[in-house]
Image (cartoon, rainbow, N blue to C red):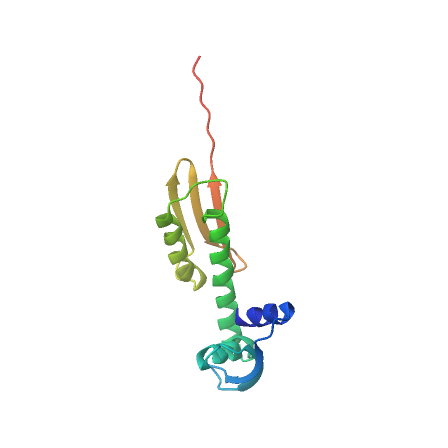
Length: 144
């Protein structure tokens, strides 16, 4: 979310934060917010939309945040920095592409079998949150 970028820059105390006026995409309400000085009109309007109190903007901001968090969880569980399993880039990309239909409610779940006992699964919980799972099965069989 854009407001988090502004807060982070402010906390770092390295400057680059200005006051700017943008408008909500949904209701047109003008809002003055702190923004990064390198942002253009689109980014400032997006920030105004994310922080607007109208119903459509609140729903939009909730879904946008949910998509960002879900993509972060995919990177955490399946991305290059994960140290537990090796996952092909194509599988990670497929999971990222499934975030939009999951978060928008077009599909309820998706599961992919990556191989070597590793599966990826995304579902929508009963509360409407997206859930990302990495399932690694370890089976041992011995014959005597």
